[in-house]
Image (cartoon, rainbow, N blue to C red; front, side, top):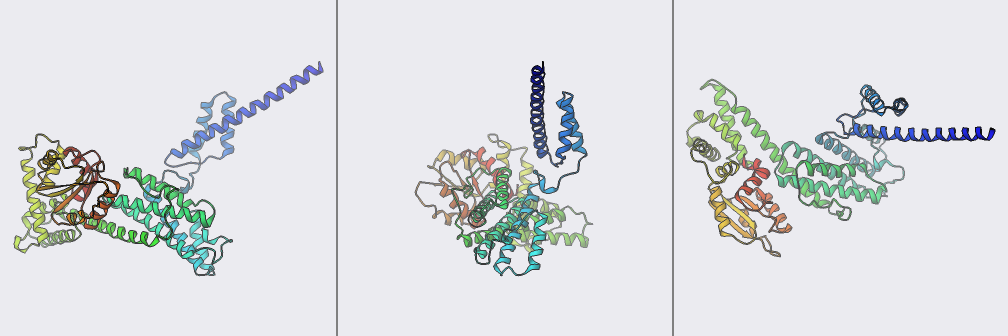
Length: 476
């Protein structure tokens, strides 16, 4: 009898241990499920682990997982919000700005080490700024001495990375064309590849800023819908750390381009505001508004904005009766006025003379491209397709250039630089990657829109790609 009772006691103890193990596994799985759902929420709320385990144990004791999860959910709603740095779904713009500030701190830390590392007040100031991001600056580690690393090179790379992220912030606010967006992503990729090599060679561990830059690039590719190959994103394709001067030159060039687009956007906003104001006819305020609009149009012309832009046309149509004689107007304003008159005539004749064979978006682009000269870089010349494109958009001329393998496209630069050329089209299906990149550089240099025809050169497909890639440059 004693042996039987002893065995029963052992069996009860074994069942008790088994139940505790099952309860612990269920509790951990339920807590992990709740944590994963919290991470997907817009604002993450943190629940103490002990409270969650107690609530789950109470629910499991009543054989009700649903009751336990609902109890935990109520406790989560009443809990304190987590710090902002733990939120996984922060806005892209805010994430980029915070990353830029962290990289600037790293660059200042490297400069502090380069200057000898003796200024304690500067170090305390930088450490206090780093604590806001829960970040320890690499250059302040005890194992580093003033001559153990190329601090000037590291400071310049971190500064270049911060500048590239700043350009990303400007691009997110301005909304530049597709070529500038891709240039921003390419420079970000080069800088994050450099930070990865720096972390491997000098820090000896992973760098959080490099991982955040990589994540930012992935989000930008999805946000801007870029389907092109981006170099330097793979560990097998590292950037040369001694190519810093070239990267800095590209950053300065891209910054000038984005600043120009930002200034252009500000002028367009000013134009929209002035054209919507209502002043007494012939009053001093009305005359001042007209002078402001004309001066703004002149500035937009100097920045390379097309005079067929919709904002310019609407502003001129709003003050058409208040304009001085054409002899007193500048050349840019007269050109914009001709575009406005053509737009008004087309809008009147559109319901009565539509193009029967083409959809609405193709007809819309016809009024922008009519009478223009366009360059198409594709495969073998097809006269029937060329004639169809000319008729669909009413082009003055379509210059079809064949892209042969192994042949340089440098001869096309003079053609693209011609003032008569309004637009450049390239078909990546028949043009190589080198041709496309060279054409992108030429168009950026001479301020010409470049459109990649990913779906062939059917007129409707061309119109769709034009609206998707360069509607901002065409004023649509």
